[in-house]
Picture (cartoon, rainbow, N blue to C red):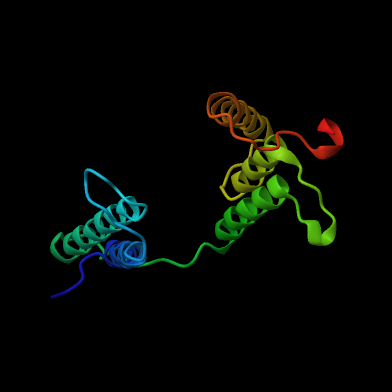
Length: 162
């Protein structure tokens, strides 16, 4: 059998592998049943669903004909670096880095950094649009996590909030 879409086939392989790994990892927890779910029930079901989705994508890649076989392109290193760097910056700014003496900068600053850095991964960067998006995300996160869920997350840097 010939692979008719390489991109779909290998993404299906990735979904199946990740889903299978999560399902296998979830079996180390108490699974329970549908009426009394244990801590491993949701990850197990999610892993199984992800593996089934991956298998369906692989099957489609083997059956459905595409124009050029959808070859896998080159790695997009710049966007990958910006997105990973943005997530790293978010984590460091949210929790601080005591080993080098960097205090926690809070959720608002971390969201602004995440949004600005990750938006540099795209082809077009407009600072005004990014700042509007950052403000909406920061306000929405504040309402959702601080007001609605009452989570104890540091909102502002320690030198501002004390």
